[in-house]
Length: 137
Image (cartoon, rainbow, N blue to C red; front, side, top):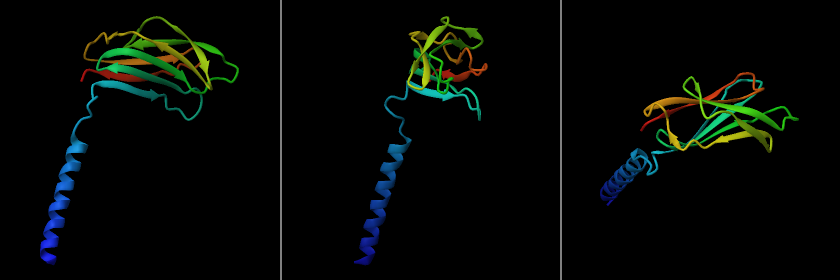
């Protein structure tokens, strides 16, 4: 009886292992949808973040977020660049809670169509750019 029970437990463990492998190894259904962010990494001073939403190299929305602006700052001029080129002009960032936020809605493909680096900054943020790679997948 113990020998039969051991075989059942081993087969059950193998089935559970196989199911977990399929669940973990399978790509998510929305693998092509982009919703990601990145921030500057400095121990002190301005912290600027970028959020990119879209699919692959399609840029639907780019958000610049200065998470620790001076307390009295109500707005700042935000810049976005793709590669080394400033793109879509500047946006006026406005205070949302503790942050200053600017949004671009380019609704277009990255100029390179395969990969590009998109960066954002704001006037007053000591020249710190938050960047993220946009890669065709």
